[in-house]
Image (tube, one colour):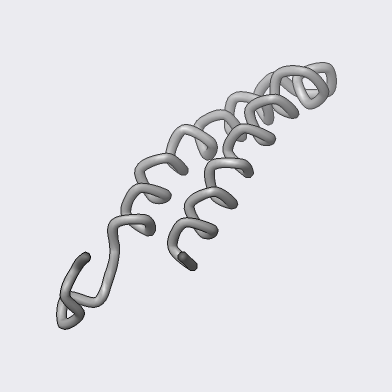
Length: 61
């Protein structure tokens, strides 16, 4: 359950970063918007690793 919440938080943050980068931040600095977009692009693989990480000793359902 906790991994699902962590996944949702990371993916929600990713979506918010993309929306903010290309609606608000690009008005001030396109470079900053691109950097934030790159950071947001790296977040989904990390979220997948967090969601799939588990205790290998515990049997899966």
